[in-house]
Structures are given as C-alpha cells and as structure tokens.
Length: 167
Image (tube, rainbow, N blue to C red; front, top):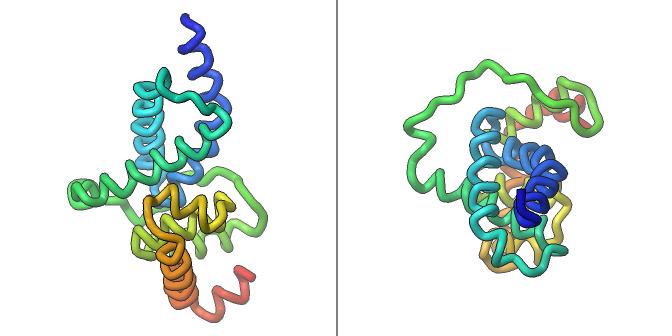
C-alpha cells in the first residue's frame, strides 16, 4: 500500500463514523447515510492527490457530503427509493432519552432538505455561519434565513407535549 493510500485509509477510519452521523441527520435513513458516506469518500479518494491543505480536510469532506446529498435530491433519488416508517437501529449519540431523539429525528426528517442541511451543519456539526455558507456555496444571509425558517418549521412539527419532553 502506498503512503497515499495509507494516509487515506487512516483518515477514513478516523472520520467515517462522524460523517455517517451527519449524513443520517441529512437524510434520515442509516442505509442511505452509508451510501452518501461511501460516495463522499470515493470522491475524496479521487481528489486525494490534489488536496494540499490537510488541516481543512474535514471541512472539504463535509462540503462534499452535503453537495452529494443535495445532488441526489436534484436527481430524484427519493422518488426511486422509499424509506419505510419503521425506524432503523440508531447509534447512541448525544444526550437525552431515546424518545427525545426519535421525536426530534422524525421532525427533522420533515424539514425541507436545504433547511435541514443548514440545521445539521450549524447545530449538529457546530459550524459557524461563515463555514456553513462555504459548505453550501451560498451567502451568509441565506444560511441565517434558512436556519431561522428551519427552526420555525422544526418547532411547528413538534407538538407542545413532545416539546416539553425534548427540552
């Protein structure tokens, strides 16, 4: 194995689970999240030689993941595949009860994709407005408005009884 392949394999081993979590939050399906991560890392491997700034590698990978997700939506992937209502196995991440996560993830899945991408990058990945704008190739104002609309949509999807539990 070459040094290039070794470096890529190490990066994949270190970051693929985190990217899978982000992908799940974007699409709401663990199997599709795996596909998104696989496509993202395949694209990353092709570009691996050209990447000079390895300190910015996470941002580049995240941006590739989001663009792959948005690109699939434009192609109509969701019309060919149907996600069942049954919940898949969920990895134990974060704090809060399982019920809180189920309620929040179900509501997040109903938020429009662009708003969902902003919410995931801003509040799950903890990116700044500027970093989110770069990842989505949009203006900072768009990130702010999409985040506000996304949070408003999310709040509207969670009933008052559920909201008390999620807080």
